[in-house]
Length: 417
Image (tube, rainbow, N blue to C red; front, side, top):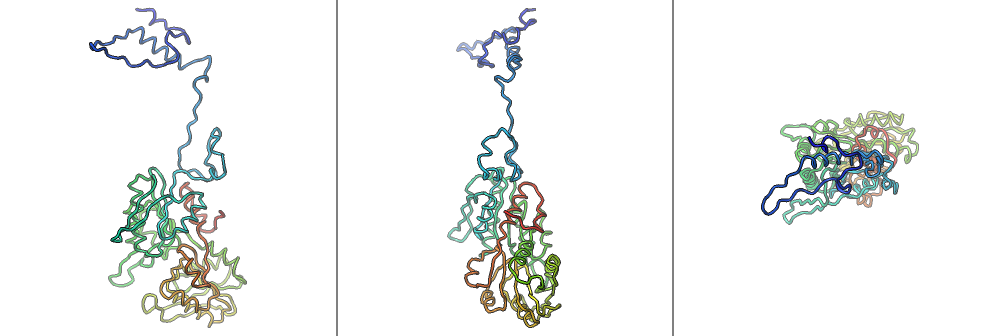
């Protein structure tokens, strides 16, 4: 047996050159003769490789330790830079707050709210082209890659509700088939929320149909605010976060309404009793209830006040204001019952039909709504309308959802951001 196989060369003294660890592949001559590698050469090469990889004299000379960067997912906004050796990650405080693997798109229903949310998240609104063909079909083009990203699409039930709903469905599907990691629909005002039950023969449950369409389009998560009926969450087989504007309303009442300590929180119908009692308990004030009988949709026949408002500030609270017939009649009823001042708080200010005319002629001191639906034009036409910005609640919900954190904190607190 050959000596050079039994006795390998000493460490660091290989006969092979140290500049290259791997020889180039053998070439074939034009005469197709095969190259024969001798056993001694094979053994020397293997042992030389071993000696090269284990250099005891200089263990870190040519092999610096590589620290892999952590996976780009679910960082908290305050801890994006994980490894201390990453010097460029701390170049500015803005970079520390950015979240990776997230895209926020805006539908055409409420671009102002989308911009406010992205500003609070320190993100840019992602690029998307939203157009209509000449036959009024919706055309959506996602303008940047969403592969492996968490996508949030903001679209509210405002303006042309049916067109905006279809636009949302197409955007969800476009992102889903573009290999996004997950798609969340942020719907501040949920469309068709009032059609949540079969209250008469042959009536559709349109809210359930909308839930089915969102799921089929590819939505993995729904973020909404103050559903008309909380049972709508059960229409979905995917996670639904139903946020509340109540903390923002409580803050506004304490800061902007004089003598709120002696106020009475009033519900304009029996369905809102739970919402009203919750606010009254947290303010430690009384509550009252107005029972109404409708002849048909958006038309009230008779109202009965249950409770006392005499000599007090009456605060009407409802989830939405549409034609405002109900709350205007309720305001007249409260003034007749002896209320000093009457305010109205509604989460979703739809203000359709004769709503603005009725409000201008009403006995309200102010009608306060949130910006789940655009209010700029309504505020110009009706000076009594005031708006609460809830973009910080939605932005914090998106941040917590993306980072895998709980959103239950938002049910009772207004985030400071």
